Amino acid sequence: MKRRKQQREHDWAPFRAAERSVRPFSPHAPNRLALAYANTYEVGMSSLGFQRVYELIHDEPEWCCERFFTDGQGMPRSVETDATLDRFGCIAFSVSFEEDYVNLLRLLDRARIPLRREERSAWDPLIVMGGSSAAINPLPMSAFVDVFALGAAENLLAELLPALVECEDRQQILARLAERPGFFVPAHHHPEDDADLGKLHKLEVTGEQMKQPGFLPTSCIVTSRTEFTEKFLIEMSRGCPEKCRYCWATFGMGKFRWHPTDAILASFERARSVTDQLGFVATAVGDHPEIGRILNESQRAGFRSSVSSIRIPAVKEEVLVPLYASGARSITLAPETGSDRLRFLMNKPIPNEVLLQKVKMIFRHGFTQLKLYFIIGLPGETMEDVEAIIELGDACRALMLEEARKTGVIGHVHLGCNILIPKPYTPWQREAMDDERNLKHKISVLKKGVARLDNVSMGMMSPRQAVWQTYISRAGSDAAEAIERVARGQSLASLLRELEHRIHPEVFVPFPRELRWHFLRMG
Ligand code: SF4
Image (cartoon, rainbow, N blue to C red; front, side, top):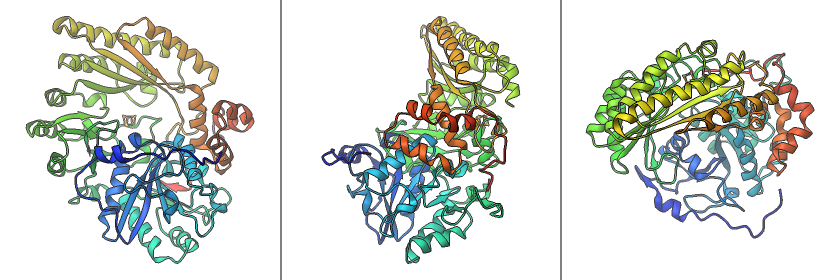
C-alpha cells in the first residue's frame, strides 16, 4: 500500500453533529480502547451489535472507547475526539462480513500498524476481532489478528478488559486469554497442526441472560447518517425457529429465544428522547410470541415502526395492521427459491400457494413495496427452478396490480438475488459452489425475465464476489496471502485468475476432508 503523505483526513464534525445519544458517553476514563468497524460509518452505525459493544464498554466505570470507521484516507481518526488510531493500546474490531477483512487490513495500514501479527512489536496495538465472522471461521485472518473473541460481547468483555489492564505486556495478555473460554489466540492455539487441541468454546448469550433486567440490546446513538435513518433499533430475539440448510444464523446462533415483552416496551422510553421511529430487528422478528402487542403498543405510544425481514409464516393480520398504521409501506420476505421442490429441499417447507396468500394479504393491507430475497446456485437446482423465480415475481406483481386497480396506487416488487455461499457449520458446508458459467447463464435468464415485467426490479450478486466470499469463508490460514494482496490493491479479478490453482479447489470442489473450522464449539 502506498504511503499517503498529504491525504485528507476525514472530517467527523458533521457526523458528530447529527448524532443523538440516549445517554452521555464520556471519552475520558482511566482506560480506553479503539472500537473499529471495518466499513464506513453508515454501515457500522447501522449495526446494532457494534452499538451494543460501544455501550457495554462505557458501562464499565473505568473504561471508555472511541469509534473508528473506514471513511476518509490517511491516518484514521476517532469520531469522538479525532484521536489517531495508532495511539491506542488495543483495537477491537467487530466484523460481520468476510468481505470486510480487506478493509480491516487497510485501516491498520493507514495507521502504519504492521499487518501480520508476528511483525508487530510490544509497542504496537493488540488487534482483537469479534463479531459473527470471528466465530464462523477465524482461520483466514489468523495471521493478522492477535485475539479472536468468540461469541457475545456481554460474555467476553468481562475477560478481555481486565486482561488488558492487569497484564504487564502483550505476551501476558495473549497467554491469559488463551486459557479462557471464548478466545482463540493464534499465537497459542494451532488448530491446523495440533490434533489434540480439542474444542474452543464460543460463548453465546443464553435465554436466561436475555431475561435479566437491563439486558435488552438497543441503539444507543441515533443519527440520520445510517441505513436505518433516525431509527432506534430494538433487538427482538436471537436464532431462528426455521432450519434452512444454508443459513449460518440458525445453526450458529443457538436455538430460538426472545427478549421479554416488558423489556421491549420499557425501551420505548429510552427511544423517546432521541426519535419517533422504532426499528424491530432480529433474524425472526415476526416470531416473537407477542409481536402483535408490541407493534400495537408502539403505535399507541406515537412511534412509527418497521421490522427487518419477516418469515413467511409470521405474516399475519396482527402484524400487518399495526405496522401499516405506524407508517410502514414496505415488507421484505425471503422465499429463497421460485419452486416448491427446491424450497422443500433446502428445508423451508412453505409452498408458493401459501406464499402468494401472504403476499395478497400484504397488498390488501395497503403495503405497496414488496422485497423478495432469492438464492441461486443451490444444490439440486435446475433451469426450471431459476425460471420459477421470474414466474413467482410475476405472480406477486399480478397481486400488486390487482390491489392497485382498487386503490389507484401502483406499487413495486423487488427481487434480490444472492448466490449460495456454502458456509461453515451449515448442513451445506461441504457443498461446492455452482460453476461460474452456470451462474452467468442463470443470471442472464433472470435479467431477461425481469426486463419483461413492469414495476419489477432485480438486484444481483456477482459470481466473482461469490467465489471470493466462499473462499474466505472456508479457507485456512493460507488465505492470508490472498487477503493481503487485495488489501494492497490487487484487483479481485486478477487475484482470482492468478491464484486460480489454489482458490478453485477450495470453492468448486465438494469439501472432501476434515472440516478445518470444527475446532470451535458452537453455543
Ligand atoms: S428463515 Fe431466515 S433466518 Fe431462519 S433459518 Fe431460514 S434463512 Fe435463516
